[in-house]
Length: 324
Ligand code: AHM
Ligand code: MG
Image (tube, rainbow, N blue to C red):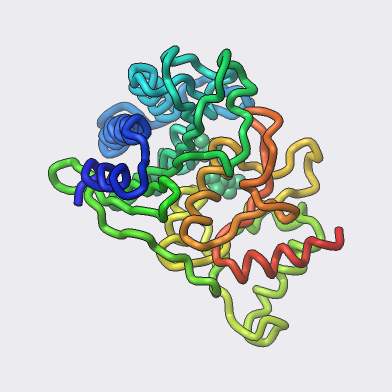
């Protein structure tokens, strides 16, 4: 089944509005353009730095800038879109006056992996536009309010994963350059023996995280009584995809370096859309103090600690944080 047919079925079975499916189709079109650029790499002159910085002072790669522009161009001409917010833009972007939806995105996630040909992705989140004048507050809705979210993974295969809040669907880009349904309603196993964390930050972690990872590393001979395996791709899209396929725990924790930055990942462009997918696949997502989807945002570019994946493992780690 192709993406179009899947979305039509969602309209019929779950009354998903046709305007929402239009937005999702526009996002998928934009991602096909991004995919073409990714596949060409050096031949498309898309590798390397753009020699510019984004709003958060991070160096932008050429592909960050290109992917951002492709999404903005495509979505501002989609009538159902009222406004956009991007990890790469300081303020929101106005689209169509009568649009019903707001689209928030990280155009190119995993930027440090672009030049070395390791999986990268695009992450998106869709909210309803509240009534009245469009302003920054219109976007500051909790993750629970999302009507859809998803990502496109530019890996060995190009894969689109989305939810319209009736389970998760995974599509693989076929030879005709169309997204074809390859897995419907994946379920994340509740238990796991695999974790993902950037170990180089260990000295900065808070005590509960130190204790938790030490238990995992102790393996069979430690408190947990089993061996754990570790993965770290440094592309959240690839990590979440692995967890949707075979389970696991992913965390980018808050650490002691800068108290004004609770974590590296962004609530609106990364944590919320991924948490919705994980929850729709029966996993869990938390900042260790509350469900990520219940956080009331205070800023477009706000950061958050993230723990997500197999439910029992997320609950185990969360319990360790209850006494700090
Ligand atoms: P980006 O949006 O600038 O690419 O940063 C987000 C990425 C995530 O995909 C990934 O989990 C994390 O940053 C990796 O960070 P680190 O390089 O510190 O391991
Ligand atoms: Mg990014």
